[in-house]
Length: 489
Ligand code: BES
Ligand code: MN
Ligand code: ZN
Image (cartoon, rainbow, N blue to C red; front, side, top):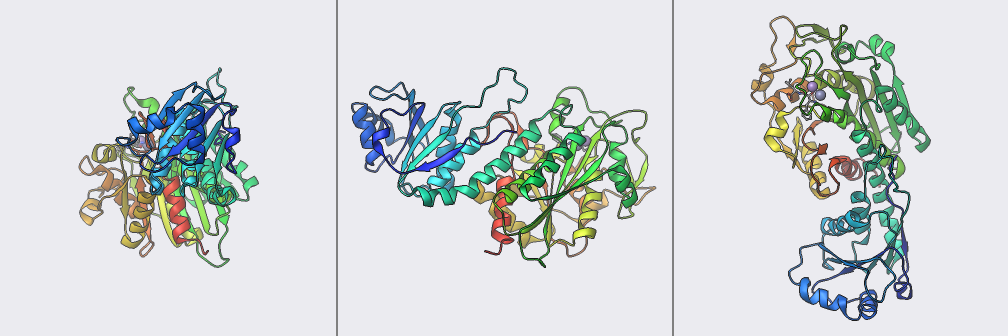
């Protein structure tokens, strides 16, 4: 799997700058005085740094990087100058790191951050942006390179950066899963990669089809009927909190490929449906992150892994299936499969764990992309306090999230003539009727948030933290929600 570039923190020693190989990066306050490292670099480069600050500093955008190639007086191949105020916010500092992560390639980096108070955030930004999915490039070589950050209090900064870099590894895990093609990431391979996380101290249990049958998960099982890959539910448990405290439950849609089933999708763009396990990918990345940083919280992650294929054994439009809860569902459109997967996993999560709250994530509807584009995930909730805690966490981490309404009128669109409900509510408010479908499977008084991440899980242009492709959206926000709300210390 892709791992973030190794980052270490070292004492300020300006004597090493002249001979440093790879890239040298320097953080400069466009309006402040040069620190010792900047003064050294300025001397080595015969004043180039001062001239750059003079020419570009005043008009520099926050966290903007300027690259000076093969700087005179230095062994480095490039000098990256990043303008960042001493009083920069955490997100601005992260952005400065992103600028550096974007240009690193496979080189070593000596990053001179001096006494910047947000040095750990700069490091996180470097780590998050320095990602490439090259599992299937035969000429790929990302083996090289490490980042050394020169700071005035290395032990302190390293301690602050350690949990953040664990979260970056969780984000990478999510991106790898989401980027992986469906012939590689089958339900079986997905479950195996999760099972491998037992070495991190997670409990990982894989429920196979016979177990799902015995539990009565007829809705989930109906989706995988046409595929040769067996449907599975994987339960990941992290017990880092107090013994008797109820866990937070995270539930993810893991459709490893969504052809639409018998209600087949059009050919154009169908290849993108390899990312339809994005919700499960985020749940998996969060579980990895909290295990790596040994979070003092109880969290259980459940993912429903299925493949939605057309075949002679596939579920037909018009079929009626029975969910674990007991509600019967008329399958009007086999392409509205995510909700069929989630309703059973949501019910199971509540029955088995009686969680303190549930967050589900799913690439659920194309309609949410029409409404919110690729900037914000759709947020739905039956509990405003819980919802606001999530929205605050997302805002604090720079991940777009926007609340949309629920309501009985929308739920009424799901009435079926022959069963308890049907799986589509028509074109109007498609994301909301999908959310209302899930809502029906949430017990009264159970705090619940549904995140429709169809627009943000994988995108076609670079985002704040990621190159195009899988973003890992949500890992940072959920990690922060857990840290803020569920951790004791
Ligand atoms: N996986 C799709 C939603 C999706 C669309 C995700 C685009 C990412 C990008 C989902 O299973 C789906 O097909 N939804 C249908 C629902 C409809 C049939 C009610 C949709 O949005 O068209
Ligand atoms: Mn679908
Ligand atoms: Zn889908």
